[in-house]
Length: 452
Ligand code: NCD
Ligand code: ZN
Ligand code: ZN
Image 1: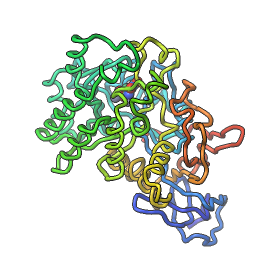
Image 2 (image 1 turned 30 degrees about the vertical axis):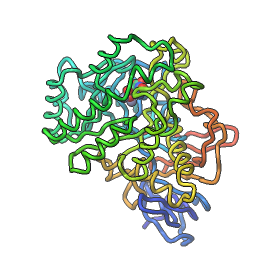
Image 3 (image 1 turned 120 degrees about the vertical axis):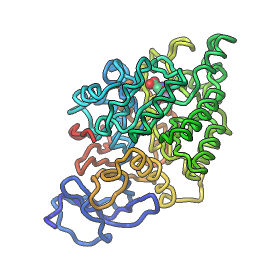
Image 4 (image 1 turned 90 degrees about the vertical axis):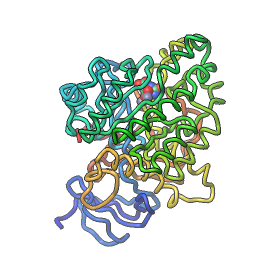
C-alpha cells in the first residue's frame, strides 16, 4: 500500500458483534485496513485515540432538515452540524417540505439545494402525492430507494394517504419496483372520529389522550395485512406503544417483510415529563407511558427494532409556545441521538461496559439502517473498502445538563438539563474531519457531503 493518509492508533474498534483493539488505517477516504494495535505504520497523519472507541459513522434514517420552504425551522447547514456533533455522518431526509418531494425532479432540486451545504452524506425518502399516488412509480433507486407514507397528518405533514384503495395501490407499485415503504403509522380516521366526539386538546397534558395508541394499533394491523398481501417491504417509523411493538415483532417472526424504528425521544421521555416540558415534547406519535418505554427498550435489547432514528423535526420556540392545539409536534434530536441511546443503555444495563453496549449502538444506528436502505457497500461498518466515516467516542466522559452546545437552528433541546454519558470527540466523514469537539467552541470541517 502507498503511504496511507491517516492512522488512528490505540483505539478500540466497534462492530455490531463486538469491540477489539486495532489501529484503523484510512486512505483516500476509505478504510484501508485494520491492523494489530501498535503496529508501526508510516502514515501522513497519525492520531492517538488511546482509551477511546471507534464507531462507524452513524446513519440517521429519519431527519426533517426542512429544505425547501421551512428554513425558519431548520436548514442543512445547521442540521448537518448538529448531526456530525452527534456522530451522525449519513442522513436520510424526509419529504414533508414546502413544496414536498414527490417526483424524481424534486429530488434533483433538493440535491442542488443541499450540495455544498451539508457536512453529512445524504439520501432522500420520496413522498407520495395523495391526489395521484401512481406518481411514486416514477422513482428509481437513484433518486430515492424508499417512499414515505403519512397515514395521518398534522401541521407539518399535510400530504396524507387516507384512502385504503390508494394505499393498496401504493403497496403494489412499491413491491413491483423493489422500493421500501417507510410509514407514519397512525390511522387518521381514528383521530377524526375522536375529535368529532370530544374536540381539540385544551392543554399539552391532554394531548396524549387526544392522539392515543388506538390509531397506531389500527394502522399497524392494516400495514401487516398489506405486507402479507403484496409482499411490500414496510418499515414502521417511530413506534411508540407496546401493542404496536408486539404486533410488528410477531409479524416479522412469521416471516413477513416488516420492521420498525424507535426514536431517541420515545426511549427517553414518558407522559410524566409533559408536566415540566409541555409542548416541547409534543410529538406525533405522542410520548406514552413507562410500560411503553420499557417495551421499546426491550425492542432495542432483544433485536426487535431494526433501527433507531432521531426524527429530528425542529420547530421554533415561538411555534412550540402556541396554544396546545396549534403547537406543532416534533423536536430536534439528531445531535442527541447517540447520547440518548448510550445513556439509556448504561442506565438499563448497569453491569455492562462500553465493549458490550456500543455494539448495540452500532447495530441500530449503523448496520441496521445500512442494510435496510442499501448503503452497505459504503456505510454501516468499519471494514476495509467502506467509507472512512468514523466517530471517536469517549464513554468515560459525561455531558451534565447536556447538550453542551446546541447546533440545530431552532436553538433549543428538550434534553437540556439531563445528563448524557459519553461524548463524541471527533467525527470523520470519508476520512476528513467533519467535527472536533473543542473546549470553548466546536470545529466543523468543509460541507462536502455527497448524495449517495
Ligand atoms: C414531524 C414533523 O414535524 O415534520 N413531526 C413529528 O412530531 N414527528 C413529522 C413526523 O415525523 O410525523
Ligand atoms: Zn411521523
Ligand atoms: Zn418524522
